[in-house]
Image (cartoon, rainbow, N blue to C red; front, top):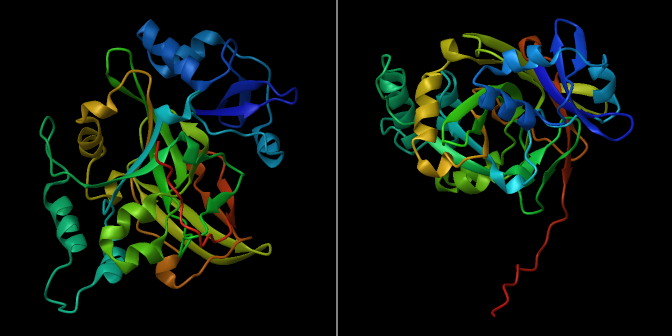
Length: 329
């Protein structure tokens, strides 16, 4: 089952559900959050809430996507209450790419990236009820940095790179009593600046402060153990780079529950009404293969298990040479 949000031809918002190829509107709600809040209040699952509401009008989601009417599968009326966060070095192939960016002069001296990756291999999948080693963690921004499927990812003028990161994101809502509820999973582009990160790994925090996109559809249910999709960079209508990407716990050094615990252990991230979109990491980057993307290129992240493909164009703001001035009061 897949959930999505879209604008109708009359401009009104709607929530759609798709099973197999049939998609229809969900009566009585205009946002996914309304639907999720109703499910929590009723004490049953999101799937049960959808079934209880019956079927509304049929909808052509592919047409809505082509016409630019698809929205993020989950958003918030106050974008400051939607948090974009992520974890790195979580996938079994991710250490090699990161290590090549952070390598030290002495090949026998492990980089901090390799140390972190080994910690995940050794302690990232604890037994049931146990707490494993904490992963690398980063903050990308809030809902103002969340870009709808089909729209452009805009790189700031000071950026040194504008690279895609094909990932799976978990989407969560914090209930009135502070409990995190997972709504589902979506394809995501955790857009980053890899040249800045390569300059010094302590600039990782800077390199992650970029927009991101996820969707167009959200998978309701469990994360498959093995996820295999395709990431592409397209220039002038032609694919200039293409590579499969893997995710799911079978391809990860951390369990999903361990990653979730180490995010939501902070009371800061359990504030009622907040939405969290948490990116689980990747091992596949066009940057690692020497691809330098440029404005006008587009990214496509596709995996049939997660519904419609995620596509975004790339634009860049003009470079500013004047410092940002802060006024004193």
